[in-house]
Length: 637
Image: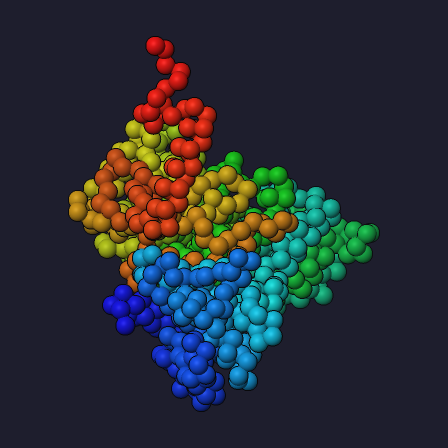
C-alpha cells in the first residue's frame, strides 16, 4: 500500500477515535457483516472484499473508503450519478464506499447503512456521506468536515434531519418558543398597554413568583384590596429571600424594577374580554408555556433572553440604540468550548445582558463536576460573576440566574468600566466572557470603544486567565488613533491567541459583522507568538423565514471542525485557518493574513490552458492577434 494511502488511513482512524466511534478495519467483528463482505469483491469475482473501515453505531452501519488523491474522490456518469463500473469502484473513494454499503444492505439484515468516501489528507480533504437503500439506491448528503454527526450522540438526529427530512425535537422546541414569545408580546400589548422596556420585566417577575413554593396561580382573584400584582410582588420578594439575594440594597433594587407589577392599574383590573386580570392571564400563560420548560430544561438555552430578544424585535427595535446586542445561545456554548471551561473555573461576564454566557458556563461546569453536589453548590454560589449597567437588564439577568438555581445571583447593577480592575481581580476569575456594548465609542469618549472593554476585562482577570470576546470586525482593524493605542496596550500586557470571523447573520437583524477574539491575561504577547486566524463565516447556521437564525444541518459538523483546528487536533487549509505572528498595527482578521495554499491539480492546469487557447483563438478570429505579440492589422504603416 502506498505511503500516502497509509497516512490517509491513519488520519481517518484518528478522526473516528476523536468522535468516539468504534470501528473495525478491513472487515467487521460482527459475524453477519463479515459474512456479507465475503462476497463483496470490487472486482466482481464473488470473493471477499473489505472496505477501509466498518462501524456499527446504534442500528446504523457506517462503511468508509478512502483515497490519498483528491482527484480520486468520486466518479460520476454522464448523467450525474455515481458510477458502478468495476474500475471506478476500485479507483474512487465514494464509488467504493457505495459499492460496499449497497452490498451490505442487500446481503444482511442491516437496513440503515451510510457510505462515506474520504479523499486527501489532514489539511486538504473531502468527506462525502451517502445514505444507501437496498432498493432505491442512495441519497447524497452535503460534504462534512468531521465524523461527529455519526457519533452515538448525534447519528439519530443526523438521520432524522438528512434522511427523513424531518424536524428534530430541538428545532420543534425553538419554533414553539418563538411562537409563544410572539403571542405573549401581543397579549402584553393588547391587555396590559405595556411599554417595551417593561414587558420583559413583567415576564421575569412572574417567573420568579411562579418559582416561589408558596405562590398559587389560583390565588389571583382580581381583588381590589390585595391585588394580583401585590400577591405576585410578595412572591417575588419571598423568592429572592429564599435565594439569599443580598445585600439588602441589591434586593431592593431588584424589587424596585418589578414594582410596575404592583402599581399598574391596567394590569390589576379585571379585563372583561378575559374574565380575569391581565396579570393572571399572563401568569397562566407563562406557567403553561414557559415556566415548566425553563424549570426543568437541561440545556443552556437562555429562555428569558430569547423572550427579551423577541419582544424587542417585535417592537421595531433590538436594543441597538442602547448598544445592546444579545448573544445567541450557540455562541455562548462555543465560548465555553473554546475556553475549555472546567469545574473549578471562576467566570466573569462584565456586560452580562440577560446572563446568557453565565448560564452556558454554569451548565458546562456542572456537567464537568458530575454528581458531586458540593462542587455543584460552589459553582452556583461562588464561581459565576457578572456586571450589568442597565437596571432592567440587570433584573432580567438576576432572574435568569436565580431560576437556574445559581444560589444568590452574583450579578451587580454597576458600570464595569468604573470598577477598579485590581478590586475585580480579587474575585479570582480564571475565565472572562464578554459581548460589550457596540458602537458607543467616539473620539470624544474613547473609553466606550469595544477594545476599552476588552482591555479592562483582561486587566480584571487573574494571571494566565482565558478570555473570549465577541466584537464587531471593525474593532480588530483599529482604524482610529485610540483603537490603535488600545491594541498596543493589550499586546503589551496580554497575549492574543487568535481571532475567529463569524457568520455575518450571527446577530440577525442587527447588521453587525462579528468576530471572536481569544486572549490569555497578564502574559505579554511574544513577538514570535503564532496566532490562529479562522474564517468561520460558514458555521452551518442559517436564517429561516418567520424564525430567524437557526441551527442548520451541518452546524454540528462545522463546529467540531472549528474546535479540532483551534485545539490543534486537525490541520486546515489557509482558506479556513491561517497561522501567523501578529503585530498591534496589523488587522487582526483572517482576511488580512489569508493566502491561497491549495496546489492546482492537473485538471486545473489543463482547464486553464484550455481557457487560454480558447480565448486566443477567439481573439485571432476577430483580427486581434496583436494582443499576443502577433501582427496588428490596426497599426498604421
